[in-house]
Structure formats: C-alpha cells, structure tokens
Image 1 (cartoon, rainbow over the protein chains, first blue to last red):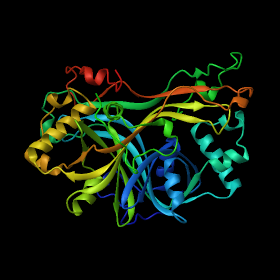
Image 2 (spheres, chains in turn green, purple):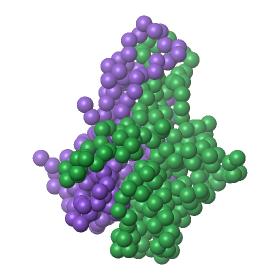
Image 3 (tube, one colour):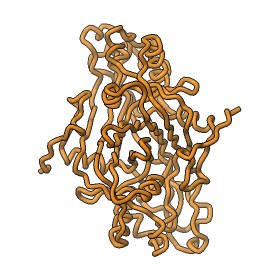
Image 4 (cartoon, chains in turn purple, blue):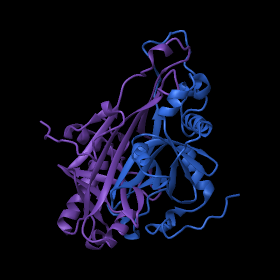
Length: 219
Length: 219
C-alpha cells in the first residue's frame, strides 16, 4: 500500500492536472527506472539546474555531489532544492499541431537537501547510488578509500513533498480533426545500451560482466 | 567561427573544469541534438525544475509553455531562469568506484526568460520548436488556429550566459588500479526510436512518413 500523501499548493499539478499522480509507488517506480536527475537550487536569487545521478533508500533520495554540492557547501545546513527526474517515452504526433505531445513520466520533489557528513552513511549512499545505476558493479570494483570518500559529496533529500506526472497512450485529437488526412501515431523512444567498449588496457581474458553486456533500465 | 564568449563567475565550471567548454558552437551542437530541457525558476524562495521542450533560433532559445509558464505569468516582465539540457552518452565503468563516471554533454544557460506576446513570433517559435523535434511534421499537420495560439505559451531566453560540459572517451583509472582484475570500459547509451504505432482511428492507407519511420536525433 502507498502511504497517503496530499499534495501541497506547491506540488499540486495545475496544468494538465489529469496527468498528475500523487501516489508514492508511482513516484518510486519512476525514480527507480531513472538514474539521472536535475537538481535546482538558488544562489543570489539566480536558479541553477545541474544534472547528476541519484539513488534511493525508502523515502530518502541520495544525490551525487557534483557542481551543486560545491555551491551548497558554502551555505549553512540544508537548503531548498527541487529535484526532477524525467523519463521520455515517445513523441505523440497528432493531426493538429496543438495536440502534439510527448509520452513521459516525471517526478518533481521539493524539500531541503543536506550534505551527508557521516562517513558510514556516505559510503552506504554511494553503494546505493552505484547499485541503482548498475546493479552488481559495486562488489566488482575497488572500494573507495578514506581520502576518496572525503573527496566525494552526497546530498540527502527526504521525499516528502512531490508530484508525478505521466502521459501515456495514443494521440488525442479534437473530434473534427480526425478527417484531416495526415499520419498520426506515436514514435516510441527509449534509452538503449550499446555493445560495451572494453578499456584499451584491459586484460582481454577478462569476460564482460552481464550487467554491462545486457544493460537495461526496464528489464 | 564561434563568437567570443567569456564565462561569468556564475557560469565558469568549477568542478572538473577540464570538461568545460565555453564555445558557442559546442553549446549549439548539444542544444540542436536534444529537445528536452529542464527549466529552473524561483517562486517564494523555492526553486522549481520543470521538464519541457525547446527550439532554437540563432542565439535565442524558445521554451514551450507548460507548468513553468503558469507560474511565470504571475510575475511581471522577465524572470531569472536556468535552462539545462543534458545528453547521456554512456556509463564509464572504472576499476575503482571513485573513478566511475558518465559520458554526457550538457549545457547550462542562465538569463531572463520572457513570455512571447507577439502572435507572429509565437507562431514562428512553435514552428521552430516542432521542426526542432521532428523536422517535416509542421507542414503535415493541421496548423494552430487563433484560439490554440492564445492557449499556448512560449518563453524566450537569449543565449548569453552559458557553459557546456562534456565528458567523452574511455575510463581513466588511477595508475595503481590498473592491476585490479575487474572488467572496465564504457557502456554506450543512446535514445533510440522504436517502430511507430499508428493511431487506431487512422486510415490504414496513409503511409508512415519517413520522419516517423526513421526518427533519430543523431543521423
């Protein structure tokens, strides 16, 4: 069962409200399929939006350091952020320009992000992040040492105030446009993995692991 | 030739500065390959990040209305935004967790976005946007009428203050890690189009246009 969640004035979807979903499980499915988020924060009244990776543990989102963390570190304690994850599923080609659309699933999360200071929580967050992006890879890699752990920053955002937005399915044209003789339909889009490219300095006898050979976000 | 551009304190890339690129042509190539952006703006000290589509005309970015515009419309004149476009190209699996990375290309643009009020500019912006996403589709579709044009909002952002960030190529491990016996390399990622799905109410004699049958961002 999903936990009950009532959207706030800030997360209630106003445009195309029929596409809104405030169900925690819907949001988590989207978050679990993606791994790239866009983090928004404010510095000197200017918004900044920085792409980075994330992982999730229950109702906590862990966001990989990156440019955002440097700015955030200058500020005290936690700062308001917006973290958005968008999965693009297709182009919707309607008969009219106006009814063209995209199939997509997105989650917008608002809250206060804080730097993870505790080394044990940070290490666990990095493991979650790694396993989120490519399950199995963590155990196969040389683990972070103390110095590397210090050089990495991780942000923690409680997933409390959020909304998901989903557009799926076929074209919806105005009734009078169905006579218009143009092709209409959906062009599906999907992020696909190609054939892994082995590092030039790799011992060729080392096999390509399954997580790299059959990488997929949706299987 | 690129126009000269000197990054401001706000757009100078501080983290992994070797990946930074302030060349206008580099930024435009990234913008022209993508079509989904994340728009950041501030309302009541809270940042919001909303996904939407965009088109480009020279050094002007046109951003499709959407949730952002409703909030922006409540504000007077132009408002500070950050528009970020990210193309994901691959997962970089290093021998150490610390040197794991992603291949990507991103552009971060800062500036003041304004609603396009002039109907002729708005129509032209919508045409640019449509042609940017799927060239050829505009002419095949039923054009926007006056009412639809009024119901659509478009934002204009001058591309003045920006930076691109690009990570490409192979794994870069610490010298002492090359003895670590784990597979290392790059898993390429690409947004791919699937087989077009014709609308259920479509006359089956209408052929699938090439722009839908062979949709690609990189050809």
